[in-house]
Length: 228
Image (cartoon, rainbow, N blue to C red):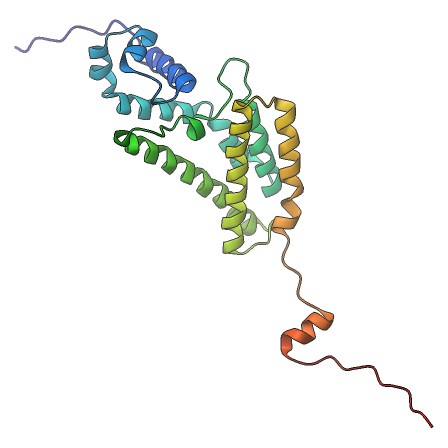
């Protein structure tokens, strides 16, 4: 009869939350396994046994982050009735999350990525994939707006608009990390939404002289009055 291993003396959910807090504060490369063991209150061997390697643990942490702090912006995209309102509320929800009183002021998807060691390339790509999915999620909401009839844009326009607002989301995180408060981020959001009508309006057809030039026709010169 096989012998059973020693039962766990810690709550994995609580330990994962503690790991999230530490990774959020220090980033991936700034967090060592010893740091994690101390913050989680368990031995390194227990971390490996329960969560796998440091990279495995970080991936689990990011899943938790996405289900908690990352959920309000996605929920805004899903639940707001119009496309414009959905994008606006997504930006506001992002600003709320990255200026919370009890958490570091930045988005982990943007600023927790390592930038140095070659061996951490898989982690960089992992976070980049999540950011690319963020762009896709925004684009899908824009496409839904086209289907619903509250947005008129071509496929190429949708990609560019989605990329623009994904860039705004990322910029808000950097601004918050550098000290911008909630009111200052709201001013940025106001500017970003002021661009909405320009970004989503169909390009007007050329008229007048421009239209004539476009067809290759030369505009007529005004007739001079006859002289006697």
